[in-house]
Image (tube, rainbow over all chains, first blue to last red; front, side, top):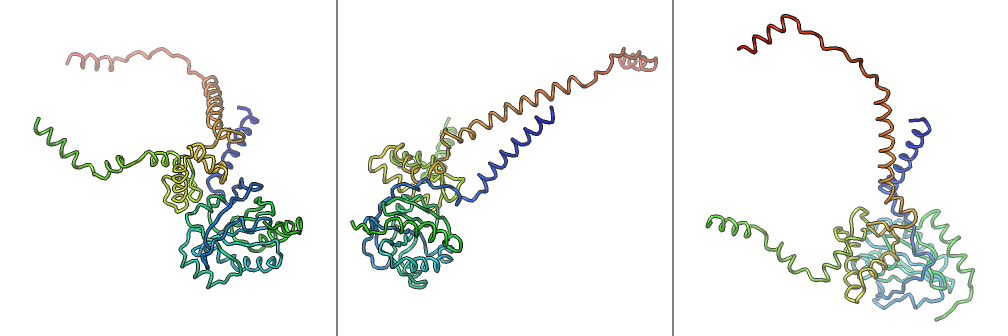
Length: 186
Length: 154
């Protein structure tokens, strides 16, 4: 076998090994979502604290940030301060709404979590996991940004901290809010 | 005959009753849920399908399948729903389009290429290995001839 053929064969094998390695040990967070640019699924569920019904349709025409979390999730605690900071940053903008989605949790645990760590926005309960599946959620925390037209514009798997925080505030939410300053009420 | 009958009876009784019950109690909906769930990957455990996985998300996905069957959705509609939420990753069997063809074709292609190179190498070795010159059988010496004759006579 010539040297050229041997080299080609080794390169092909190395390429296949790299593919298998990525498939077996790659981070599932890097799986691209198919939901970007699609219509955000509507949902309706009880508020974790008040029990009152909350639906996405209520916030039609606004930029909505959806943050999936659970009281048992360590990374949710890691990002909690940043999440509150993010709400603080945009809460005065009438075109911005932030909603938490409590996922695979017990109501007393979720309420206790919010009392302990504090909250400044509403949280809806995902009672049967349907909401999470509708949004293609793998685990928590996961964050989605929905634009004024009701389309999913951004998804992040993992805590919103550091560079991720800067990216989501400056490169995702701020441009969306600038794009359509007039509030469209439903 | 009686012994055989008794043995059969003992064997039948030895089989756990819930095993039969589980099979008999399985409705058409259960079968459809199982068939669909087996084709969908558990997104939090990766190597398992959602029928075999014990993860809460897999359990909820099975619930969603059941609910959709109850609403009259077909198997393909339910699979399409999961596909629209999670992409190709949710399918245990990658769909045959685009770059996915590589997964289906690569093993056979490798076999063919490997077989070709193996064939080339083996034929190369066979051709290049020098064959020893044929030599006449060495004649038996007297001592060996006598030993063989002695053994034949005994």
